[in-house]
Image 1 (cartoon, rainbow over the protein chains, first blue to last red):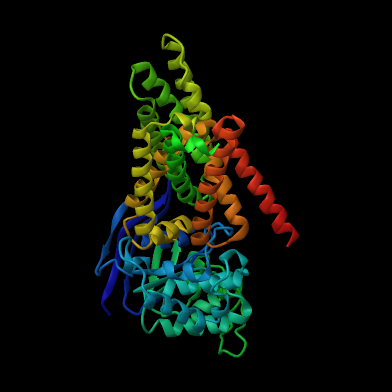
Image 2: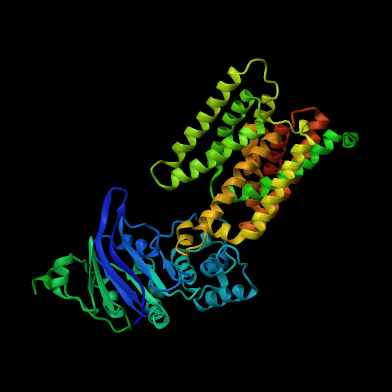
Length: 251
Length: 266
């Protein structure tokens, strides 16, 4: 598959603290990369470097494509003011800024597109509500619509399991599978069970990055990266049960 | 009271009040939505330093205030952006340092400074034709800026981090709106004075916020309240022979209380 972007020997962090060092990774078309690693290991920092939100201390990011509609981003905690006077419709519309830039105006077709996507994800009846009036799960659904409305080349998700409510969970992961046919997905998750079932490749991040060309997690990886495991059940969706962390390492 | 309308000075005052009303209605809605009220207070008070310095050097006080307001606005926004300084500390520094510089230079200037009081509390009745034109140009610039960049401006104000992942020219947009905020504050000082400017940027917006939770509707209603309240206040001040700036602010307060009571009774 064709590469979309490449991180070359990236070191990054905050002020004087280096969180990531010597990271090399490429994101290719239709990738579904699961990022795992301990807390403070640099998972979110890696996402922010990829997104261009943090300038790396050293190394470079090579883009093999135009930056227009490159990313759709679903943050773990969106930093926004819940009392900001913005409607659900407008929040989703803001996802089109990448293709519009700051000069091009928004058309009726854009408004139709927004309404269609909200309808598709069960948020149609809330389109005129203020974003602050929604529940946490509803808000995240709206932010997911914002992230995918421009059909980005790469969809980046930070810990989706923390905000996807149980009603939406099954739907959410099958949706990701569907989206993956059109776009690459990079997902940070503590939820190793989910990672295994859906992702194609795994990147373990703990200051450095170790890339696995499969979605199988071996005891060696767990030992090396001290990745936390939670046992989860997916209800009617086929699922796999992983061994306890300690047992799998012993094995 | 209406015979005042025959006089040039009062016509100028009304025209200027409307222009400033529109400017503050638009800029204020952005400031309130983005929770920049305290920053605006800092910029306003910092401009007093420029005013004093210009007075000392024999330049136009408005020009000096504009230079200091612009410098303070960009310094506060950019220094707090790189996270080395806390935003509220920076505001405190610019707020007090600006006032200190202003006081010092006025003290050093020989003679009495009668006009300076009008910059502290505002006096729209002394506005000149030139200042009306200046307010008109600024008002037009603000209207055009909002008309052209309404959506990106609004989206960035809502979620800057997300907007940055789109790789669009956010810096240009921020420079534009920051400059307009600073200049709007300086022009408004003629009407309300340094001490009362903040009310023009917050009270009409608070009133509009009671009725609408939609940014566009808030923009329109706060502009209407801002213009309407200022005109009513101006006539009331002329009729009752009271200072215009303070009367207009109290007029906003009255509208606020009436609207609040009406909303509560609903």
